Image (cartoon, rainbow, N blue to C red; front, top):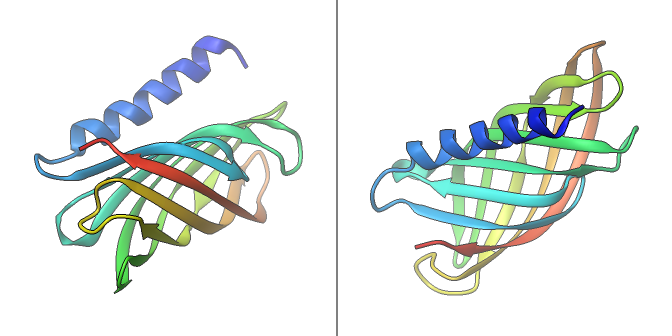
Length: 149
């Protein structure tokens, strides 16, 4: 995989989520550790819907760069804790590039009231790869994000 292919995919993810972010929506950017270790972006829209995207290094199977994006719904709030689930896609750039779906389930904690400031999160995602062959996996990651607002 060339640098330019990766740059195009990352740029497309960033543009898709930042242009879909409505005025007044919350946006966070940060780092994640686990499967995938790298950078994470999240945009919360009205009605509890959120867009999430990330890029980083995959440690499961062949080590390789991976990008992912998902549309999520926050379904339970308990104080500063927020639980969410969703569906999205992933691409893993290894020798035989993997294309598939991810179904994230996670929780995050706001360190400040109202959503601004730091956010710590943990997430597990069942994965369904469709190409080059059908396979299933589970990924888990955690991290820290900072509000851009």
